[in-house]
Amino acid sequence: MDFSAIRLELVAALIALSLLAVGLIAPRGKREMTGYIAAIAFLGLLALAFLAPGHGSSFLGGRFLNDPLALFFKRVFITAAFLVALMSLRFTAGLEESRSEFFALLAFSLVGMMVLSSANDFLSLYIGLELMTIPLVVLTAYDRASGKSTEAGTKYVLLSAISSAVLLFGLSLLFGASGSLAYGDVAAALAKPAFGPASGDPLAVIGGVMALAGFAFKIAAVPFHMWSPDIYEGAPTPVAAFLAVGSKTAGFAALARLLFFVLPSNGGGLSLVVISLSVLSMVVGNLIALPQTNMKRLLAYSSIAHAGYMLLGLVAASRAGLSALLYYIVLYLFANVGIFAAISSFGDGGRSGEIASLRGLWKRSPFMAASLLVCLLSLAGIPPAAGFLGKFYLLAEVARQGKLWLAALALLMSLVSISYYISVIRVIIMEKAEDESRIRVPIAQKAILALSALATVGLGVFPGPLTAWTQAIAAAVLR
Image (tube, rainbow, N blue to C red; front, side, top):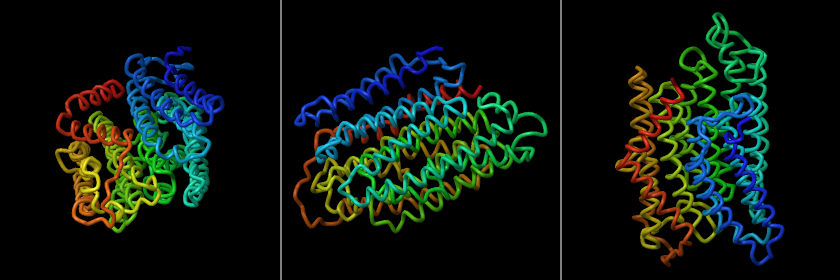
């Protein structure tokens, strides 16, 4: 067993346990330092992921892989955890207790995400999924002063249990069809003539569809999106941000490995299922986002639509499609974190999240307004922000494979999305605020806003390094 394959997970688990210990031994007046300790620890973990990643190693006889694809996702997860930890400093400052537990749960969820991205058999996949989800349920209900937070936590735990049951039953059917839990053995069994989803074998077909349905819930794809708007609105703003960028990305990490290496998604019934999820998510997410008046609900429906765009990379089922998906995930991370950081900078910590509260933001905080505009334009796909190239790469690959109608639909829905993003920008710039006093933005929030805006513009103007990296990952794992 090569423990270098799980060094990042081990360090992340040690961070989580250490944060719990800090909460127990630190004096009551010093417990606010837990957030800073967590942020520094996540930053150190990110440095370890780049400097000593344990690249190419495996654990438990190949059941756990640390290949380039897994390592890419782990770096994304750690970056998200670091930014969310900084964003959470203001939220946890208003808590009288349980500050250290908040960041410890964040770290435990991070461990689950990393396990999920490296899972190479059904057992480790399910363990990673539950280790990610259970802390997120607690974090969603963490704001005990808010009835919406408690309601959101209750909904999340119930719907997560249902989706996990569906996923687990699907995986059990695939195990029954193949006789193995390991991805390689399952793929070999499904590839046999007159067997597998393409041949109509009932166990494999139903198992594959149920597995896709379970992960469709995690990425909030239609028709498994019902939880997303209520939970985004009710959860503390930093937790909603982590759900938007961490949980969704983890779902795509596991889904990509299943569709590229286990289930034959480039033809037959499963391909139609993935295309249907993509189409429904783009159409429903964008159309229902139009009338929203709450910023967090708008971002929830926006994330549903973006799940549809990201699924295009899996529809393509090619090196270029995977590379485009990885590029899109990075730009989606920075754009969403920047927007949620702006929301959390308001006086109530972003609890209300009403779009009307952004009126006159251009005068109240020019720096925050400028950063927010850049992130919104990126999600809308307007150049020079990175969102334009992200959508271009995905649509170009889908069109190259002959699915012109799908690329045209995605382009049309992207044009629809401009409407609701522009409506938010109009409120920021053109409408007058009732209270024109300056908004004091904490240093941590300023750092997040600056980094998000710079990364969003930088990846759009200079996409070469990131695209070269994602292309190299796709070439390494799809030989």
